[in-house]
Image 1 (cartoon, rainbow, N blue to C red):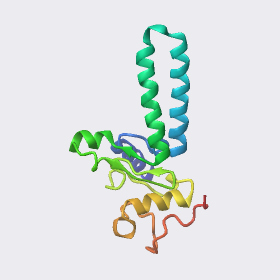
Image 2: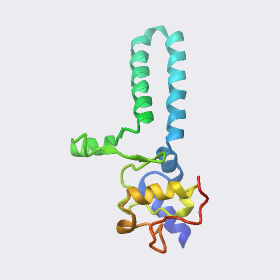
Image 3: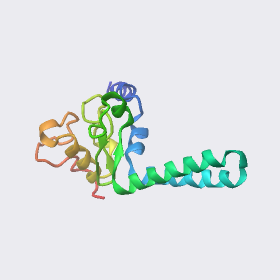
Image 4: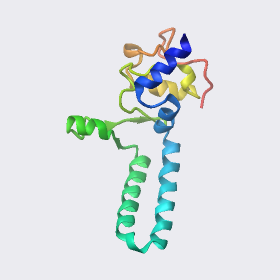
Amino acid sequence: MAKRQADASEKKGGVGLKAGKLRRDSRFRLVVIIALMVIVAALFFFWGKFKIALAGIFILLMVALGMERSGTDIDLGKLVETGSLEESRITKSDGFWAIGDDCDGTVDYDCANFEYQGDAQAFYEQCGGVNNDLNALDGDKDGEACESLPAN
């Protein structure tokens, strides 16, 4: 029964929990951006016809790298929906991004979705802490999520 609920939660969220976790991991995002920059740079030197387009893509990747390093990001879906840059801004805490519907209970997270207590704590606090613990990460309501996980 619990397995079926977890599968349903993954489908409801639109992205599997593991993919969602990688999407929110700052280190993973940095590796992907840098890998794409290397690929685009290599293509720039070997694919003469598209140098202007590749240069533009490389500049966009540099902007993405700068935004990632500075802790600034934007939820494009929310930007299109609201038209407000301020409302679409995403926050980052301890290398963890709060993206999209993380805090509305659409996707059911539990302590098994986090490797370290600090990651679970950052998620818990970004979603409102004790006042909005829809995922029951803080069973004893003491303000500390997933206390059984190792510290990072």
